[in-house]
Length: 216
Image 1 (cartoon, one colour):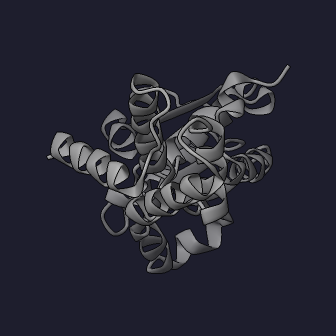
Image 2 (image 1 turned 180 degrees about the horizontal axis):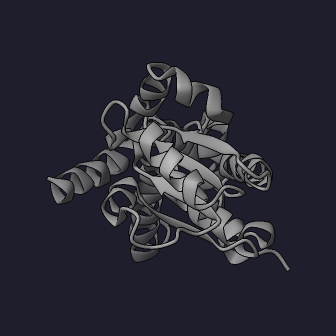
């Protein structure tokens, strides 16, 4: 039976998870996982820690800042999955990884973060040479957004209406899975509250404005 954490992942996230888990099985591996905010990097790290091959080696996730604060006080897990690595300053990533491997010579480490992470690695030749995998989680394609809308908003109108709604959601969200899913879930609440109502792009715009106000 598949792990529930894996079932929730999108196809792109599942692909990133498979590559990441395979890479981190190798002693001494360093992997990068990049993508814009909301594409599911944290979710993929959590799923990786639960895969049989990595959980058996005592994998753990934490923000990069938390690992920095730990210092040498505690022996780290054998597989260290560091989130928000783009927050590091120049040179900090290399120092953190070298400290990890002094404590866990046969371990493996993943760094996840937004686009600045790639710039930090590119500016540090030692770190760049350590990296065995550069994984990227892309935003949804329009077809992926359509599939989610079709599955969750089947009662929101006919095929043409759902296609217009899907296009609007995709444009507003820029395909970021977390935003797509929030809009779709709120739209589903609207549809369930008014059976028979056809969802239109203006409704999606109103939902997005509500989300924006909540986030402000």
